[in-house]
Image 1 (cartoon, rainbow, N blue to C red):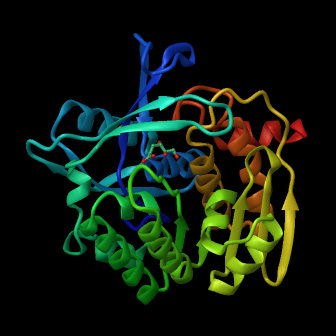
Image 2 (image 1 turned 90 degrees about the horizontal axis):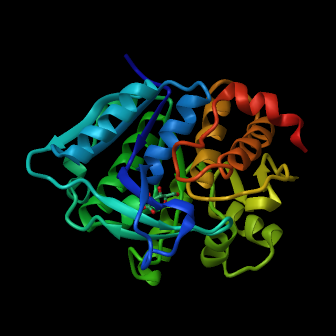
Length: 310
Ligand SMILES: O=C(O)C(=O)C[C@H](O)[C@H](O)CO
C-alpha cells in the first residue's frame, strides 16, 4: 500500500551523557535513537502521517533496535535493507539547549553504501512526498548520488520533494557541502533550513534577506527555522514570521527534524503552509523539553493541547 511520505537517509543509535556531562568525563549514557531523516519519520508519524522509512542498516543489535523503533511507531519498514555483517552507525551528544554537538562513529556504515541502483523508485513514484537531507549526501559519494536519483524520480512522478540541508560540517568539506546543498534546494519543492544554513547558502545575514534569496533559487515553500525565535515562511509571494512558544529547553537535538516531520504531516493532511508552520513551531519547541532526538518528539494531541503555551 502506498504511504503519504517516504523519508530516506541514515538512522543512528544515540548516546546521550546522563545529566549532560562533557564527553571526556561522562561515564553513563542514556541510549536512544537518532539520524535526522528517521527522526523526521517518527515526528511525521506521531503527527498522524502514514510513513515509510528507506535506508540500509546492519544485521546487528543496533539495526534490530532501530527496526523495533519503526515497527513500534507504525512506520513501514518495507524499504529497509539489512546488510549481513554491516555495522549500524552511532553518535554521541554534547548537549546544549540551543546547539547540540555530535561525535560520530558511522564511517563504513551500511547507509554509506546506498547507491542510485538501490533507490526504491516504484515506492517513490507512488508516495505523495519524499523527504531527504544533506546528511545523507555527506556520508559518501554513492549515498549523495542516491539522494539525487531519488529527487529525480520524485520530480518525474510529481511526488513533492522536501529537503532539509542539515549541514554537519564534521561530515564534509564546506565548499562541496554548499554546492550540493544549493543544487538540492534548487530542485526541491519544500526546503526547511536553519539560519546558519541559510547564511551559508546565500551569503546574507538577516532572516528576511536569506529567505528572499532562497525564494530566487526556486522552491515553492521555504521555511527558515529560527530555533527559539520561531520561523519565517515564504510561500505564494508572502513572507510570514511565526513566534515560538517560550519553553525551558534542555536539549535541542532533533528539534529541527521534529519541525520538518510535523510540518509535512500537517501539509499532507491538507493544512495550508501557514497552519503547518504554526503547528510545527509548537511541535519543535516541545521536542526540546526532553533529552535526545526521539523520546521527546510530541504526538499530535500533545501539540494541539499545548498550542495555548504562547
Ligand atoms: O547528525 C546526524 O547525522 C544525525 O542524524 C544525528 C541527529 O539525530 C540529528 O543530527 C539531529 O538533527
